[in-house]
Image (cartoon, rainbow, N blue to C red; front, side, top):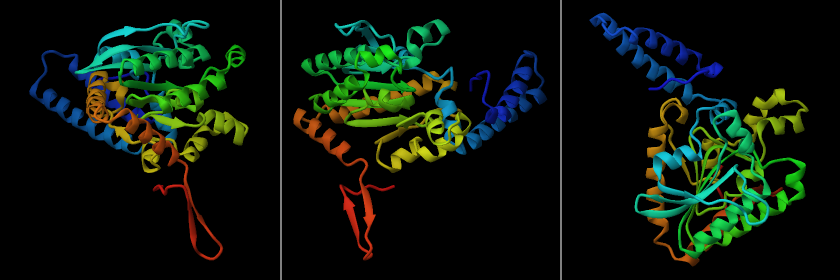
Length: 335
């Protein structure tokens, strides 16, 4: 159990227990009664945290996904991968720090890693545009993914962005076009691709590196066509309705796994990934290793075909006709 501060409003009971634990644990010469009190508080902390996190609303999940201490792509590279060698630049405009690319080893597998990076300090966040990639970031990703295909290396993408950078310069350099090109390229690459939403999965910025053979989400992440604030601004003309928009968007891991938009949900440590980076990295590494073991056995043709069929089946629906019969548009999915 590790503590984080400041916490969320809904976490106040947890933080109160942590404060009590800190006060008791400061005393090195504790009595048997104090030792027992600490054990009881730890049990209560576990029960309280489990109860609160089991009942999180979609808006509260968004808050957890945005937590300042949540592990980012660089954290997973340090904790779950070996021998990471970063690759820079798109050979056209520059090197976008919001998009991290490079070769690494994951157990026995040599892979290419592509991921959004937000930064910890304000200086890092400003350099990384708060995780919002420019067109040169997606061009860099495409260039490195082509290289991975050439050398028959699997690709692992970590998605963690509120959206692609919305500035004038990004639009002038073809933001929408390059995201479409990246999705089109990923649909055709003859190498295994695994995409994992590790925090925020916002809009086209997330989709730009989100076409894979396996799509996974961390338990308290979200994956959406638009941020809750953006949706609230459009539908209700005010960001104050972000919580209402979050309920309507159906973008949590439980929603998207039922709708088959994502294949797998990776369970987070008790209280969220921000409380235990090492445990979260271990779980992520296990998932990636097992999934790679399955995908590397497939032929290049099977990888492309499977990926194509997966995305063609998304967004299908059942239409009820006036005569009481129904028509399925596309392959039927549960939801």
